[in-house]
Image (cartoon, rainbow, N blue to C red; front, side, top):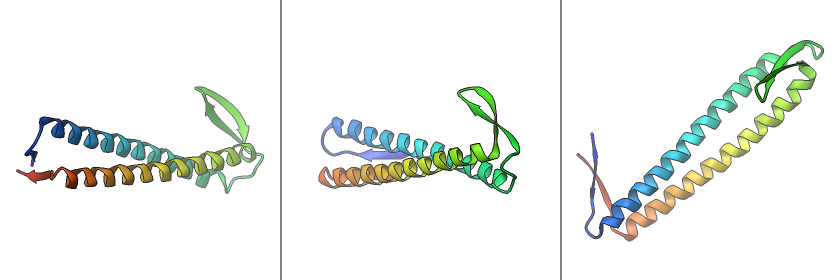
Amino acid sequence: MRKAFWLTRKPELQTQYSNYKNNLQQIAQKIGDVEQEAEEHKLVLETLEPLPGERKCFRLINGVLVERTVKDVVPALRMNSDGLKKVLDDLLKQYKSKQDEMEKWKKKNNIQVVQQ
């Protein structure tokens, strides 16, 4: 199915609608990327946490593989994981805000999207 616009006023409305849709799509892509990275952190933490703290593990830092111990890596992973959760929450709020803004704009300009 293709989406089509029924714009009764100015061609600028179609451009603005496209901008809203593009912004929402970009935010959604970022959300997907952060969710994937957070899931990877979760899996690594689940793997490392039951291991003894003195066990060797390797971590990739800026393209360099460095040797560490589990007790050194787990706190950093937790901190990164918590940061990713915060970023994800912020992105979700941003998406919701942009979506609400778009809906208000559509009502104000009497924009209707029809499915063909």
